[in-house]
Amino acid sequence: MAHCQIPCGIFHDDLVFETLEQNLETLQKADHELSSSTLPSNQSVRWILNKEDQSNQIAQTMLTYFLQQRVKLDDPKRAEKLDLISKIALQCAKVKQTTDAKEVSTLGEEIQQLKGLSGVVPAK
Image (tube, rainbow, N blue to C red; front, top):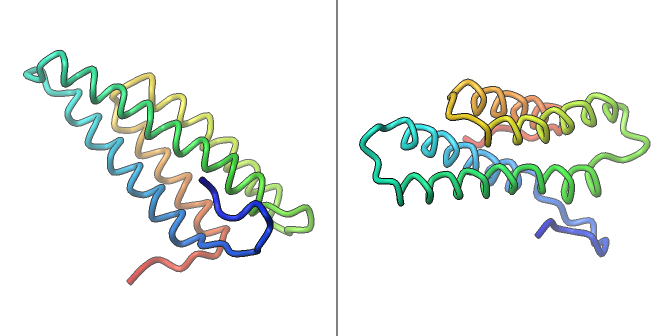
């Protein structure tokens, strides 16, 4: 899943953050759909499962990409990054527990903070 653990040193932080942003968009859409009172029950179940999956993907990326590969012992921003990664993982659990758009928004803000600490330049 995460590239690269062999180690070849090939990292594409910008691509990882694009994927995280796509996960966030899906979570926002899921919350919107789940807030609809006219959604058939089978669709509700599908959106809930998708929301669980998207949240888990974000949390897994925090572990397999950032913790295992991108936060080095000699990184001067290590403590700040570790704090954010922990907050993001916890926020993923909160996102699964509600359809409150605020929780997904908070998750997005935390990911953007990590993106800034990682030095990724926003796409043009």
